[in-house]
Length: 376
Image 1 (tube, rainbow, N blue to C red):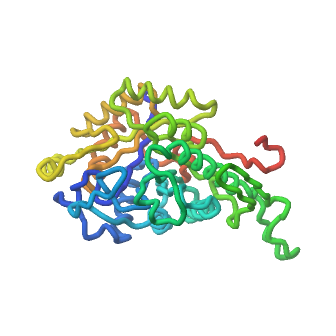
Image 2: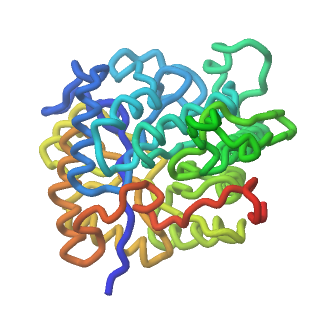
Image 3: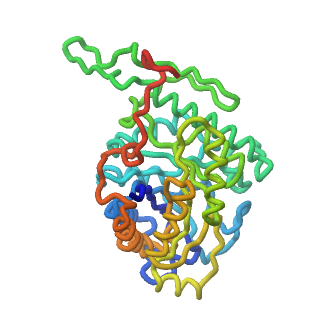
């Protein structure tokens, strides 16, 4: 029997092609409207996808990695990913919501409470796509001097590791049953079940406890995109899911083996794939612009994409974060074309069987490191 794989959709503006906003069926006038984002997430939920990620950054979109490209023919500007997720959480039921939140220039205490709040709003469906910022133009938004560019990569990911560890400890700073709410005795909390985290690392020092009770999942799901050794090491140590960008099945096997060799704990390795499943949209985009991508670009039918995903799964991958080239067309093609194809092969769920993101992913309950009898 084919093992079921995991699927997520990566949502970014009008789609991952830089000219997607000009494609037939695109909705550029709605990119800053809550209804647009809700419609995309509901479409992904209709396909029983594990989760959606929502892209974000500290600078305007650019075709150049280290600077603004000065182009006016591409989507510029975005809404805050975490706030989008918070708006969508109460009006969706099953799908996981994983906003991108940058660790650079942010404080773990704030991030921990924001994501814990999202977990409450979604009733246990929150996750976090960790991102670092090394671009000079983004550094200029903030006070202080920072090394940027590739020279900063080691420091950025060391800081991110500290950040995630502090956030995780803050999530555990309330035990699950710390809230008593006993009107008769006048005790709202059991003070013995709130804990100082006393985290002190090279980049952050955090006392705790959090102002937000432990999230419904205990630990929302932490994810990270990684392209090379230093980010692999970070993700292996800090994340539950690492997104990688292989070129083919052999490369997928090698990357998955490398990532798993860096940790003794279970970690899921997913591949990012940019997908064009809508023939009309892809044809129009070929005339408008070219696409360069850090991830593999797939163009073809849902059946052909299913073949590729199952081949890469056999090479050692747990799931796939699909980046629709054009929204909403390619997301709808994933839901109406790819998902049924995978289901006929016994490779994808027919319905949700869990109400939490950890449940969708088959992740175990997260023990609280500060609770009595738990080994940290």
